[in-house]
Structure formats: C-alpha cells, structure tokens
Length: 372
Ligand code: SF4
Ligand code: SF4
Image (cartoon, rainbow, N blue to C red; front, side, top):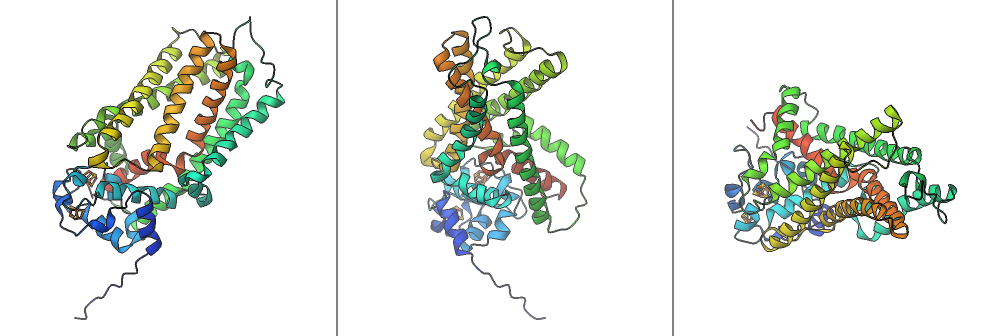
C-alpha cells in the first residue's frame, strides 16, 4: 500500500501572531506531554493541550483556530504550572483563542483595530462623537434641564435616542456574531452534518454554564470560579434590569428616576455591586497567579478595564445624581454610556466574544460526541 504523505506548510505569520498575542513561551515546548497528563478539562481521546502546542509551533493555523478544544480549555493554568520547560500552554491556547476571535469576527478591519492598543482612542472616539452630537443637537451641552430642581438623566439624554443608538449597536454585534458562529461551526464540522441531538447539547451546555462546573476542575487557579460566577450573574441581573426598564417605559409609560426600593433598582444595584466585586476579584487573582498562570495581554486587560469602568461609572452616576452633584453626575453618566457602547458594539471583536464562542464550542463538543 502506498504510504500517505501529508505536507505541512507552516504559517509563519500565525506563529508570530501567537507569540505577539501572549504565547511568547511557545518555542520552549519539547513535547513531553506533562501538560496533557495534568489537564483535568480534556477529554481522554485526542487530549489537549500538547497537540495544540505542536500545531502552534508548526504554524498549522486552520487546524488550530477551528478546533473546539481551544475553547474547552478554561485557562485554569494547571498545565502551565507543571510544564517542566515553562512553556505556558494555557497562555498559548489563550493566545490562539484571541486569534480565533479575530479570524471569525467581521468586519476583520475592526477586529484588527480592537486587538491593537494604538487604535483604542479611535474606537473610544466613535461613541463619544455619536453621543456628543446628539446631546449638542438637543442643546444639553451647556444647559441641562432639571425636573423639580433634580438631576434627571433622561432629560440630558432622552431614552428614545439611547434606544436608537444601542439597538443599532446591538444589531451590528448580533449580525457579526451570527456570521462568525456560522463560519466557525462550518469549520469545526468540516461541512459534515452531525448526528447528535442539538437540543440536548444546548440544554446541557446551559446547565454547565449556569453552574460554571468546569471551573471546579481547576487546581492552580481554583478561586476563578467565584469571580467568574459573580461577573456572569451580574450580567444576567443587568439584562433583567434593562428588560424591566423597557417594560416600565414602553408598557406603562413609567419613566426614570425610580425609587431605590423599586425592584428594578434593587436588582440593578445588587448586580452593579456584584460586577464590581467580581471584576475586582478577577484582577486580584490575575495579579496573585501572574507567575504561575501568566499576567495576561492587552486583549485580557481591555475587557477587564471596560467592564470595570462600566460598573464604576454606572454606580457612580447613581450616587452623584442622588447627591445632586450635577457637574460630576452628567460627565459620569456620559462616560457610562460611552463604555456600555464599547462593550456591546465591539463585543464580537474582544474578549467579550469568548462567552459566545466557548458556548458554541461546548455545544459542538456534545453534539459531535467529542464530550460525553
Ligand atoms: S507545553 Fe510543557 S508540558 Fe506540555 S508538552 Fe510542551 S514542554 Fe511538555
Ligand atoms: S489551562 Fe487548564 S484547561 Fe487549559 S489546557 Fe491547561 S490544564 Fe487544561
């Protein structure tokens, strides 16, 4: 029988990209497999992360970024802590995930800008200009109207304009995610129709995410579960708050500001505090585990910083309004809107996207029977 020869064409740009994205330790790997042995998150058949280290060293981009395993890894860093060569496989796979997000999100020019710190001010300027233009057109830049002498943010920036801007931003993000997921699923499955039950895969994945069960498998960075749960459930709480606000306004014409004892305010404030605590714990854990797990890249810190600013300005705007400090309250509220826009409009291009691609990979792993 003729021997089958597979020619591997290394993509040198991809290798450099992995190195630049936080996988600088990649070349140290000598394929001993210790990382695969200590990883508690990998399936037994074709386990990771040794094979991913090999693909990354060889620059086999297509095989790596379309691989669901890069998302089954939860960056617990057990492998990084035990690697005898200091090759940090957890960080290398993290770098590959960033490249996967960049690869699947469209338009790619925007993805490249979000990944590059030198474009931060340009991206930041987009919501600033849009929101400033609306506020200036309403004549609220120099003279903000008050209601019964009190600060009312919906007078400064009427709800209808917020709705238009944020619905358009969310629609843009949803469209980009839809295109990315379609392409990613096609690449993972190789165009083959899977036999597993999609509904069961989705259901099991949702339960797994709600309990953050995979984080329990971590040894080195055990404390990540609490911080991630706090951030996850605070996002759920804030989504409920936003839904309630829509029902109040469009269902009952009941406009803000709402009293602190209103269910909307109670859920919103608990979620805001949980977000602050959760993000604070993530920062603390990253600093504490930097030596064992790596300190993270611009991509990681951009997400953490944007979420932190959203939480601080959201809570701050409320306190400044209640304290009636107008000259600080309005700018704080303005920057809150700017960063919420940043978080949602650019979601498909930065770390926020990991929630979506990881979920899709987990569903795929179940439907394809990669995982039980
Ligand atoms: S990353 Fe480290 S532990 Fe894993 S195969 Fe390479 S050298 Fe061994
Ligand atoms: S970071 Fe954790 S989950 Fe990812 S490959 Fe290493 S040991 Fe496995």
